[in-house]
Image (cartoon, rainbow, N blue to C red):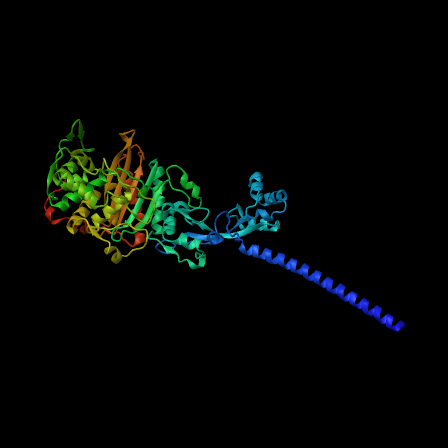
Length: 570
């Protein structure tokens, strides 16, 4: 009996322990279920949350995206990307804001501590602390070991030539978005979209080749910079076009800016005067008036016009600057730049026909090229007699210098107008875009007149410098409007040229704004400044482009139209 009782006691104890174990297992299982339930719930919440990858509203793919390099026509770099570190913070991960500010100031001493404290406080996901720092600064920041502070490598635009090509290439902002020039044009053509969708990786973007020649660009920049000081001018600008293709070979507008410092473009006077400035271009318009009149057949090179007296309109009388006070042949009107003679030529043509010719040359509308900087012209819709008279010598209407350069290209290339471009274009491609504006015969007559002016007219100073490169062209000295009136001693001077005149390949237009006399013996009209600048640019650039000097007088003789053989030009 004692043994049986002992067994019963043992059996009861075993059942009690099993029940306790089962109870504990249930508790453990319930705890584990709760824990894993909480974890699953949190994971679900995280899965539903949108992970913030943007820094101040811009996705990282767009921030780290690159841009295609910009090259000149010969493959030389005008703009390229370099990879630089930028410092950002995640305020929610900052443990001690004051400590972070103190440490960051050791690496970023120029950063305002109050501003920095504000940036590091709050619940923002990501904020910039400093963009585009040097690698050494980035290394100092990382060595601080601050949680929530990190680096992101992004693309920074670098322009090796500085300001030399500023108005062509333009610039980008801190986010590598084009804000002017061809940089903005690239964005308009799709680079911005590639950046935003993450496809604009540096190694994936093919370099973009432009039409400009960096050698020519530098020569123009150097000579126009010299003109600013030599003639004490407030501005100077120039553009060179391929006369057959319309390619822009060089474009400079001074004062300029450094695209490596985009804010420098905001200083006064930094506009692109060639494409975005409109001006009264003075007697360069005589080439336009002569082309219209000759092409109409109403005027010939053998005609003469009375330039002995001024032309009166009401109480105003228009006279010549250096009047010959005699009857002038048409070539003499051109080389002496007679305003009186030009008025009579336009009168023979007819004011409506002259106005229609300006429309033919595209002077009514903005000249649309790849550059976003452009301006609307100011040409009266209808010409009165006096409006047509002053327009014959470039007063009372304003266009951009690029309008004039494109028109001059058509006048010398055989009569075909082609819209300028900043991308490479061969003659065959240009030919598909040609629009005839004058006949080949009229173009040949204009080449003769332009060369005559260089040999024995207002372009002689230019020709003396350009020498055997056989340039021709037309001066333009226009009084500027000051306080609503023309100011007698404040000029905008222009010279529109082409070379070589026996087979024109390039058109070059230069303007010098408010020049002063270089010395007491100098004048202030265009031949003394804009003309000389043209000569110096041609002298430097023609050999670069494969044009050899040739002093053979037979080349000039060959330009003489048959109708003038035996006619004396005084």
